[in-house]
Length: 420
Image (cartoon, rainbow, N blue to C red; front, side, top):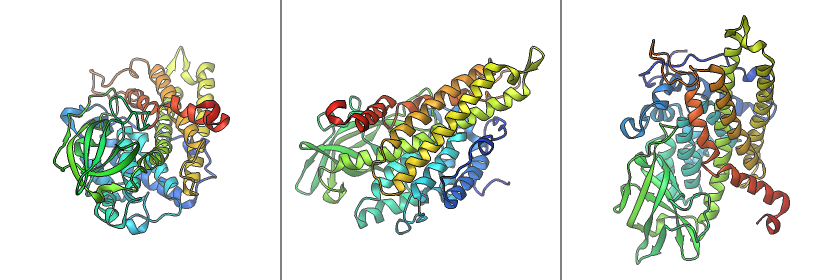
């Protein structure tokens, strides 16, 4: 397949892709033909556009190398941002938009979790939040976002308030003025912040929380320097300072005091997306390990002849089956109208992300020195799995730490009066 028009050029040696094992072991009887077609389309795009530049993204420096705008623009041209949205917003109007969107995210994460995270925040969090706005808000902000003309961000986290989004913990405040609202506060870990054009900001209004549409160019908005992180180097995060930001009345998204419900609904969707990203990385590690075990020899035999690796891979095959089925089921519930598809969303997030971390660690072990290597000095060979090891860890943390997901499941099981 030839590169797509306008595809970004590779700037570093790409890791040779191993044979994919998913179709040999996973038989998808849950997804519709529509979703399967989207998955295949996203896979072709990722193989052609993302794979050649994945090494550049994974080993770059957030401050120096910046946002992978070439890949973002290519996703826009491919129409991938349209998957999650109805036709009247410029979307594809799919029958099962959530299922298609998270399937695409798995395919993006297979080559780059940074790209999957950018896509998730742009579409699932910022975009789907804006889709709940008024006709004018959707026209002004959602249409351009779907077309990729602007970049979206979603700002709930603060330095001392990330998983805890209770009104008493959120310190960003929105006060009424004669013409609208004034925002004061600081948000942290905000994906896409250095390049965002529009930011959905959760702020305290009295005793409750409200959501606001904030243009990044508004007076009083300052975006800090990008954070330098362990992994996900292409997913830029930074602080956003809101110092007396004056907004018109129509900047309020939804009703006053209704911001927490919007945020929690978007984060529930986001957990399913992160689960899919975890499965994508886990599948990539699994495929690399399968190839290594069937080609590498030690002590006169293939590594795969050792029972330790046979049993380990059998366990991972089982966990991959379970994790993928869980996130697909959670997305199907979302498409059926369950705004909070629990406990499946929480279960899927734990299953997919913990699997990604576990299998990436064992992939590094299997590849030995090469697994721990970013680039081999002798000939420039890129390490095949070290980026998976670095990128996977954050999925257990963001969009609701896995410990919080266990609490959500416990609440479903035992009730709030017992679990708290």
